[in-house]
Structure formats: C-alpha cells, structure tokens
Length: 436
Image 1: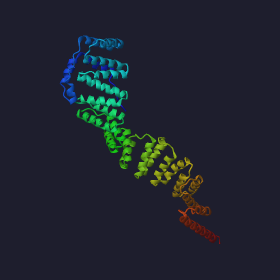
Image 2: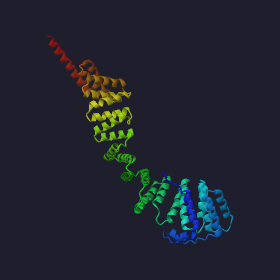
Image 3: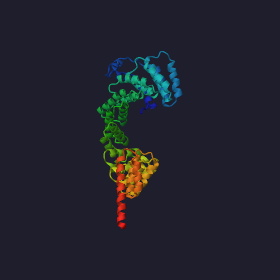
Image 4: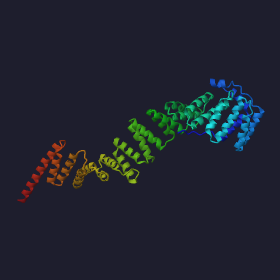
C-alpha cells in the first residue's frame, strides 16, 4: 500500500556533491527564498564556511565513494572526525556523508542516526535540512516509525513554498499505516488539487488510497463518488464491480444492475459468483429471460459452478419467464444434487403445468421419499391431482387424505376427495350404461 521508494544511493551522492562544491551558493539561494515563518527564521542562519583542509578530506572521501571504495571513504571520514575543532557545517557534512555510506550498506538504523546528527547541527543550510528531513521521513517510514515520519514530514512542509503532490501522498500513506484514516484524507485531496493546478497528471493510486480512507470510515457516499471519478479515467473491471457492490449496499439497485450489465458485456465478469450476482439482480428487476441466458451460458462453459443452488436459480429464471419447458432440465440437475425433496417438489409442479402427469407423479413421490419438505401437504396435493388425471382414483384419494391431515390443505383436499368420488361414480355409471 505504501508505494514508497527510498532515494537511491546515486541520488544521495549527487546531493552530497552539491553541498561539497557549492556551499556558499546554496546558502545564498536559501537566503533568497520566501515562505512560512519557520522558513524565514531558517533563512537568517549564518552557515559557517568549510575550511580547505576539511573540504579536501571530504572531497577525497567522495572520490573513494564514487569508485565504490567504501573502506577508503570511511577511513577518510574517520580522519575528518578526529581533526577536532570542526564547525557545525563541517560536522553536518561529515554526518551527511556517513549517512550516505550507511544507506548504501542497507544499514538504515545507522543511516537514521547519522541524518539525525546532521539535523542536530545548528546553522546548516536550509536546502540541506530540507533534503535530510525528507530522506529521514522515508527512512522512518521504511522502519515503521510512522509517528516519527509524520513529525519529520510536518517540519519539512514548513520549509517548502510549493510542496509537491508526491509529498502530500507520502503523508497520506503514513497516516494509512497509522490507521488514522480521517487524517489521511486531507493530504490526498491536497495532492490532487496541487497536481491539477500545476497541470500534472493525476495518479490512479492516489484515488485508490482516498477510496480506502473513505471506505474504512464507512463514508460510502464518498466511496461512490471516488469510484465514479476513477472509472471516468481508468475504466477497469475491479472498479465497476466495486462500484456496483457499493450501489447495492446503498440500496441503489438500478445503478448496481446497470454497472454489472456493462461489466458483463465487456467480458469482465469472469468469476462465476459475479455472473450469478448479475442474474439475481436481473431477477429482482423483473428481467428473468436475461437472467436465464446468463446462468445458462455460465453453467454450460463452466464459469458458473454446477451446484444445486445455481441450477435452481436458472430454473427459477425460466419459470418466472413462463418458460416451464426450459425449467425442467435445470430442475432435474438441481434435484440430482440435493438429498432433500424440495427441488423434486418444484419439478413435480412444473410437470403438472406441462400436463406431463406421469413425470409429475414420479417427481412428487421422489419428493416425499426424500423428505425434509417445508409443506409435505402440498406434495400430496400435487401427487393426488396428477394421479387423478391418470384416472388412478384410489391412489389419488389416498394422497388427498394425507394432504387433509394438514389444516392448511384440509379444505382443498376434502374438495378434491369429493370430486374424485363423484368422477369415479360418474365413470362407473357410464361404464354400466354402456354395458347394457
């Protein structure tokens, strides 16, 4: 999440070179700067001159460092330290060089200590303090000393007339590590404003970080606003899915569905659960045909898992579209994948709607055999009705009597029994009349 990269050794060496060979120019430039009160005070410093003998030793150490002869550089720095009587600027340059060497050795603890020694010296050039503070901020960050990083960067800001957007982003990243999400919002917004004013390109990761802050604070309206902004410039699958989920969480089903459909048409919904979510949204929006096509396609190509629940959703979509024939196969697949009878009961009902009486009887009996039905009486009612259509009056009557044991179906079942008795009597009388 940090996106942080420490200044390279080459950059540190280049920085050091500038201080060694142009200390007076730097000091002069610093004095000409205008800015906040801390900067104005810093510009009144009188940086002491570097004596020739110290300058020469440091220059020799620099040549060793440029040749990657660190041992030589350290020996020369030790000689400088032992010279005695060094003024504040000479000490600052010596510690700055030591910090560079420690940094190059990945000895960050000692590099930090050396940079802190630079800042302990009075009357150092503003430019030196500025660069050392920023480097220390990065080192503190890398060492997870986040509170120290904030304090160091806050002072660094006081030395700047026009801080860069990246520096504000760095501050926001530190606040993220501190889990101070509220404090992190301001720096990111400032970074965006500064970059916009300077005509610089806005960075995707800035908005991602801002989005995280709002999300952690459960400020979902702002999460939605940020995601909409991101999508306008960086239209990616993950952002469409995230924004759709946020619309769903906020109850804006129409907006959620619209985004999911765009993502599906773009081929971004590769995960089965995402396709199922879209199908369910379409069902809620009374678009069962679309839902059925999406579920059917996903189940056929394997992107949607072949599970009881997914086949059941497909069957439901076809049923809501009044396509009972198309619902049969999904219901058969779903029934095969479950040990309870609920799906078999739905299958029996579909067969009943299609006037497929024999299949209806078979599925209703399978439902009763599997059991664990929410309404066993309904299974008996369907079984009785389909048996009646097959003119199996005795078994139909038995089924309706079983249904009548439940008070919720008693009246309907008794009516059916009366009807079965009457039909059976009518057929017997008709048969007798024809036999005469």
